[in-house]
Length: 175
Image (tube, rainbow, N blue to C red):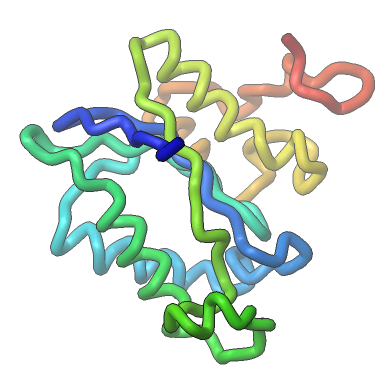
């Protein structure tokens, strides 16, 4: 069975991308290079980053594409390739990837979800902003530097202490 991606022009999508080697932390170690790759692609292929969190070995983001445009796969290919080209070749590259001229930085696939409505959007933004706490990288969402929570706070969308009430006694995201 062939997986079919959602193709909605002007759609809003939630994405998860992961490094091939989940023990690495190159996304935060080279955050400026990753940001540069995003900026470069956005200049040529505009889109809006509604929310984002960059973790050491994965990222989550919500994008809204321009009206009449549904081509997020090209954007992701360019972002991943642009970032990968800036890194020294230290990763293990499988024969399969070598034969296709690929690096071993990213997992080949990524997860995308078409945002359905305002509630779905809010739920995914909350998931993004709470992710550093969930993974033990920060005590509270605002403590993680590589998150759009800082933009949300500066724009008055959420309070500086957003998410602290979601942390249960085990440090987990409450239901």
